[in-house]
Structures are given as structure tokens and as C-alpha cells.
Image 1 (cartoon, rainbow, N blue to C red):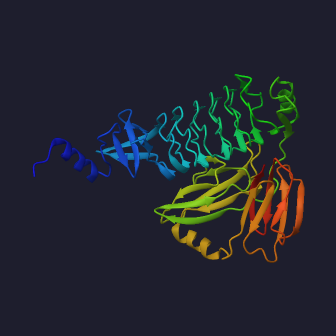
Image 2: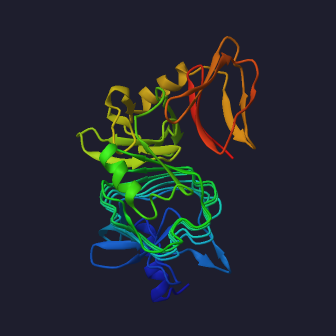
Length: 390
């Protein structure tokens, strides 16, 4: 059968490990679509047709995409690329420096995201209407634009970097469960509107020292006692616990989320991520490569509590073999902390984020009611989780 020019181009593209889209996208690789934006760069494109965004589940974006003899850097995410998609967690590589407006808006199942270190602005409505719970804005971000996190009803903790200068209208509008802001900015970020935190109340703001706290207290909005309570950050309350598992398909997952945020350093000592996501993904290799995982509040790095992760397949298998069979679960709902699994012989300790001990007993009563809205650190045996109660 005679093939058309288009058929030949499609076949060549498939043989090269990518597909040229007959729609708006230029490249498709491993289920992700890209537009070519320069001779060496691509942006992640929407996968929206028939009224549906086809991205779903866990997305680990690569730093580079190979197509038709060219290695393209993944440099950007297009506006509305993941809008109304069914993605649940997204890890963005440091090659990305720009994320377009509403890139993840109304992706209602998106609970975890790690932003790239080179990001300088959080665009309009970027994560509006998502289920993100804890988020680090990496150092270098100078602005949070209008509606960036509007209607993020699950957002409880946000880490603001020292570089942040201003926050736009309704950026945190109706984030009704927002309870913690960790701000490393010595000067209060300028709020462009009176409704930046509209619908929020009882937000605890953690700051570096007395002088910074006074500056925030003197600000007309940050000093609003009905909206914010200002605190001096005193570090983390309990020891971090990290779990590691081999996911297959060349990735290993670090289960984090125990102690707010983490800085992750590569084997060369360079910072590769700042994240508050529940999981961070590392590539698996045949050779031993260690990564340093340091708990942080951005203001203080808890280097005495640092952990080591590996990307060697055999070492990960040893870690999993040593893990106990019984799995403990710790969840929170409607003012009650629920603990499940085999807790025989263990103790339960519950702290608030300032290190105050609220509960200390043998792990027998696995339904514990505590006052809210408040964030607690729950330790059962060697399992530690951060739980927010309404």
C-alpha cells in the first residue's frame, strides 16, 4: 500500500521514540505532549480533546525529550496544560523555568506537586481549585500572581521563600483550611489587594526572629490579629521518618511529608529539590548513588536530622525487605485522629507544630479527638505523620 508523506513522517517519529501529533502538539513521548518553542526547547502542551484533558495519575516530567535527532530541554509548561485533568501528583524538573497561567487549575485530584528550583513567578490561577495540601515555593520566586491558589480548600501549609516580594489579589482566596504560613522573607511580601487571603482566618505565620516578627506585626495586613497569629519559628518538633520503595519502571519513591518540608541534595552536593509533597521520585540506577534529604522550614535546615536515600536497585530491595510487615495508618477527619494497623507494644505521641506535647499514651485508643483547626505531628512507634484537623 502506498504511504503518504504524513504516514512516513509518523513512522519515522515512532521509530525515534516519539510521535508527531496530527493535532496542535508537535511531540508525544511516554504519554506527555510537547510543543517545540525553540531549536533546543519544548513546553509541555495540553492533552485536551473531546472535552476531556487526558492527563491522569502520577506525572514525573523529564528534563529532556528526544525526537527526530534532537535532544530538547523541557523548559516550560503551557497555559492550561493540566487544566481539569485527573493528575494526582506532579514532579516538575529543574529545566522548567516558566509555568503558564492556569496550568493546573481545577485539577481537583492533584494533591502533591514539586515545583522547579528555577521558577521565578507563580502565574495567575496556576493551582487554583486543586487538592494540594502542603507546598514549597522555591527560593527565587518573587511573585505570586492573582488567584494562584484560589479555592484550594485542602491547602494547609505554604512555605514562602526569602525572595518573595508581592502576592496578588485573591492569591489565597478561600483557602479555608490554610493554617500555616512559613515565611523566610525578612520584609513582609506586599499584598496587592485587601482580598489576598479572603475567606481565611486563624492562620499561623512562622517567622525567623523577633525583628522580622515586628516588621510583619507593623504591616496593615500581616499585622491583622483576626487573620494572622505571628510566631517565631523554633524548628521541627519530632524526628523525621523516611520510607523508600521501588516503583519499578526505573523510579524509586521517597515517602516524606512527616516534617513539613525537605531539601534534597544530589550526589554532587547540589540542591535538586525543595518539596513538601508526600512523595519525591528518584531515578533508579545500577550503581550506588546516595541523596541527602534534609528536613527544613526554609528558615532553618535541620541538618542533625538529615537522612540518606539511595538510587541503587539492590539497596532499595534490602530496605524493603527490612521493613516490618504490619502497616500503620494515621489519618485525620472532623477533629479526630484515627490510627490503624498493628500498634501492639507501641506508644502514641502527638505534638503541635511548635513542639508542645498534646498526647502521650500507649497506642490502644486509636481514635483521638483534639481541638482544631490545628496541625499536629503524630508519632506511633517509628511512624510519623503530619495531620491537619478541621
